Length: 510
Image 1: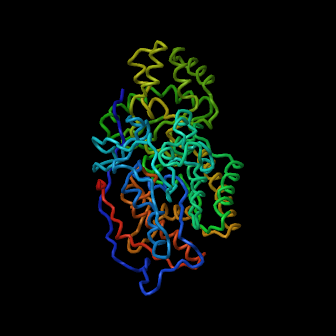
Image 2: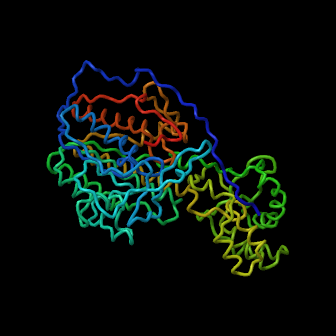
Image 3: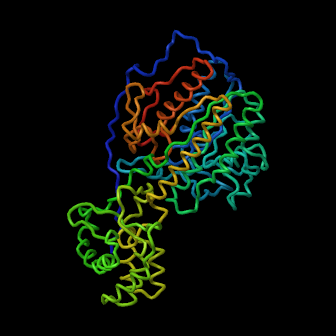
């Protein structure tokens, strides 16, 4: 039985110095003006990207480098007013309710030289039980989907039990019954930014398309987004919106390779011959049933693909059990193998594994092990059949198969069409974040003299959770937003330079 086989990330910490002014020009000789825009009351709406979420948590340093805060600092030079953020209490991250840490809201990640890990000995101090006093200009709510911004009671602490409330909004809403859009409009904004919709597809992606966090239905997204735009512009406010990036191109889905099993690993390599011999009858049955592509064979000298469950495949468990028994495999064993591998295959480069799977592949699936033992399977046999990605197929939540990737791509295209149409009809500035993401993943973007890519850790764009942005990438995004504002409203907002936003791992704690 294989124990504690984990894929580890090894990266270089060498970063390119930035000191050229070729692409980002401050143009100090030109006055900073607002053009036809009015920045006196700016409100930013969105999700975790807007809030400044980074390294798997929300914390002070990330909030101070959030793209709306950087934009507001430039707006202030063109007549903009103050910009307030519902600040966290520390640079640790994590949330408390009644002094107890909320499950799933732990401290931030840091880099230990080999891989991201939770901040050691971190103790969150941010309590959500006593709401802050607003109003707040940064209305970014981590985890929010498009329709959540319209939902009443989204900040009601009692709704945390049934999932109708968000703990971040609980902390800074004006009342338990209010909505994000209501608190935003109560400030009578003259200018707004809206970057929402990412979670409408991202939630499906990060759960491997297992159905626990489905893609938002088209009708609901259309109604929610158009209502947001209509409401935000109802008092004559101008604004800027961004579309949804291709979530499957972010590092979260690019770090763990499909062939993560390596014969050089001392916990795996010595067992390959035995594994291949044990699986030989199963592979013969696959061939007999006309599906030899489902065979499971591990490479004795190199890397091997992880074994996954693929719900898009026909379930041939019943036929498989019959063939195995006809081939001399005892009935109990035949049934176990058939149930386990009736909808399985080895992964290919077309499959995308979520980042957390790196700590699961090669470990014993304790739930499945207990289930087998409960059925009377000997403990040793149960252990051998319960190794994630080797003898027990990785379940749906860990991997995006091609059909699920296609669903994500279709929804992203559909939603982005809705966003662009709404922006055009309202005469708003527009940022094509999807094109930016594609460029990041296909060679990178030039930010002054710095080439920023989507590569995990060393690419400079994404934080240690593989989803959210670094401070430098937030500055780049702020520039893209301000460039769109300048083009649409004739303003002359100045751009940021990458050298003002250093990248350092482990992250420095203020």
